[in-house]
Amino acid sequence: MNIDDSKINRRLLLGIIAGTVVLPNIARAVPLPPPSPQRIHLVNAHTNEVFDGVYRNQDGPIPTVMTDLSEFFRDFHADQTHVMDVEVLDFLTTIMAATGQTSATILSAYRTPETNAALAKTNFGVAENSQHLYGRALDVYFENDLEKSMQAARKLQRGGVGWYPHSHFMHIDSGPVRNWDLEESGFGALLLAGRRVHFNDKGELVSNGHVLRGGRFTTVRQRLSRLRQLAHAEFKQRKRL
Image 1 (tube, rainbow, N blue to C red):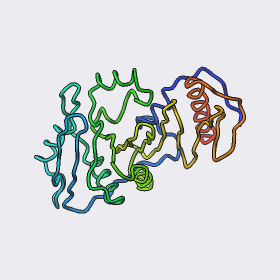
Image 2: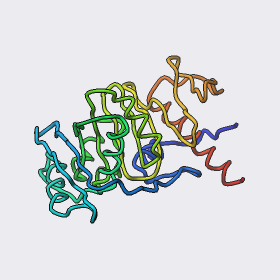
Image 3: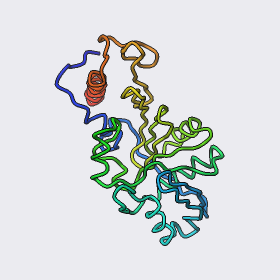
Image 4: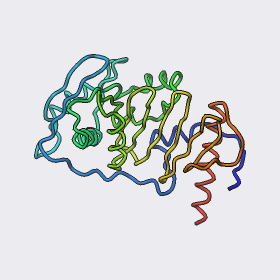
């Protein structure tokens, strides 16, 4: 496949992470109601606060508890709260039930626009229009079976799942179904439509075990450019089908 080497930036890829850009045949999550009552045990890594209780009963989310959880999930940098999407909580409890987790440590939940912008300047994988801004995302750590939990989350097809192996956490959100891996050196792999596109240790682009033509890309900017080109070419090709 010939790929146009036009001027590129990283916004499309970060848009995919944020869930604001969805390429063809990327599914939308169809949440299933969890069994009632729904209980969860959470620890806030930054404030050391603990939540242990039922947030959903036979009538649905419990309003007073959801208010308490908004405080628990607040942006501790700005000390501001936001209504949390119950679907991301349901996603988390389903993952925990599937993998036998009894507690989850929350590294990041709601972010104000100011906090998100500050993080975007220093952290490569922070999207400008992140689901965190809307109370729809959680960055989670499990003491045991973290990778197993990430794989279980992806099998559920309930929303976005990001894997950050070098930082030892996973991201989940209640946005469109999409997956990505982010390695220490920069963008590690983007998973779209069942295809994993990544760079090997030589800087060569690899898809499904095959090295793609086009040379080596040693810098993060070069790698972003090539992934963006590939996504754009795939999009154009599917529009013609």
